[in-house]
Length: 198
Image 1 (cartoon, rainbow, N blue to C red):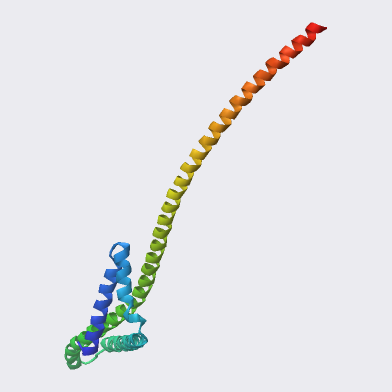
Image 2 (image 1 turned 90 degrees about the vertical axis):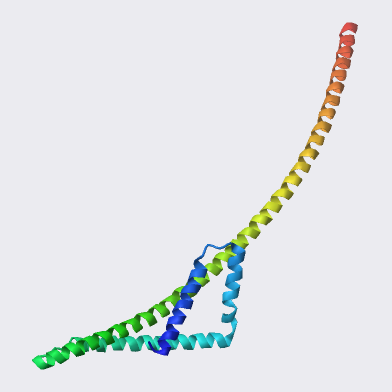
């Protein structure tokens, strides 16, 4: 395998390892740290330019390998009519099949590398969004818990205040009931005296 296909293979293995790391079920804080470590090189403009150039080179290799697969397949299907040419064709045929195998291997290698690049960028974006949403949810849950504790404290204080108000109103009601009973007895006494005088 040529040096550039070895480089493409190492890029494919690196992408597979990154995809495996992103797919692991890790806790939120570890996943956030992992995402920040993975995204740190991509924040550099030079690194982004280098990655785009490498991907363009891999795309060129992919197109070239697809062309080679078509050429070798066409060469493999070319008919041979002479008996001597048939024997020579058998030898050439195995050579052509080997070249077709290598061309197909290179095509799949470059194609999977490009495809995994697309999948990896989308997976990274989704995992990053998931971490942000989970962080917001955790912050919202802790603020709700703090609010609920404060609300419970306020509610218990309000309950104590309301009980004291109820006791004050109960005492006032008893006082007014006593006054009403005394006024009623005074009224009956006055009404009884008035009817007795008539």
